[in-house]
Image 1 (cartoon, rainbow, N blue to C red):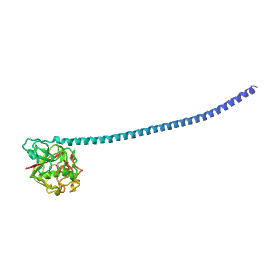
Image 2: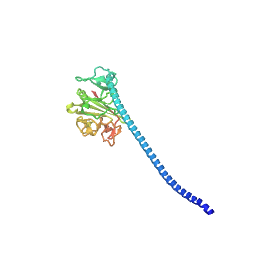
Image 3: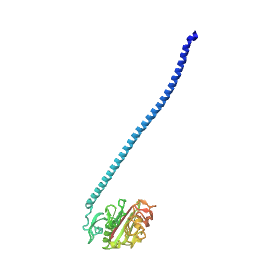
Image 4: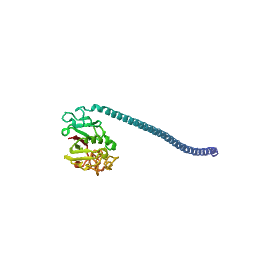
Length: 314
């Protein structure tokens, strides 16, 4: 009987075990599904974060592009303002030049008229006989004074690689770097005997000079043909080679003007090139006589720091 009485319990135990196994299977399936779901949720979150990150990056890139464009606009505006300021300064310099003109010595045909009058070096109004007046610089210190300066290089602030008309009429600032103008030089030297004095300085501060007792230019029809001779000095004679040569610029005359980046009385081509490119020292790799050159002092591949050319009647 006990066995019979125990049978329901045995059946119950079996049923309970079967239920437990089913529940376990269900739990496993549930947990498996839950794990997959959890992974999917994580993947979705990751994707959403990526989308957000992309959105943030995209916004950041847009902001960077905006800032870059804004800075470019401001820089363009600044350049325009700077250009305007430079023009204003240039205009003020031109306006004030007359205030810088010295009046010592009365009416001057050239700077030689100042000799013996105790006048200082500076900018004067020159009025050659029968010609229109123009501004020039008088050197009253070198070798007795009375020199009319026709060229000066000292800091590279003025572009000397110019065309025919600029060299004909002159350019630059008489109290800085400048070329007086071939037409002015021709008219001055056509009214008497003139000598030329050249002062040179290298980048170590050493100086030399060259004097020519004969210096004269022909008119524009002769392309300002050079007559030069009678050298003395300690720089070496680097200009006698140019005697009889015509003046050339990048747009007229000898091709040497282009190859040397200058303007000069080129023959084939030259041993001097004082209107050459301002190269601040050695010119190796840029062409032997491309710089501010004076061969018989520094040889090739050396560009001088300063040069001054001046003429005086005698």
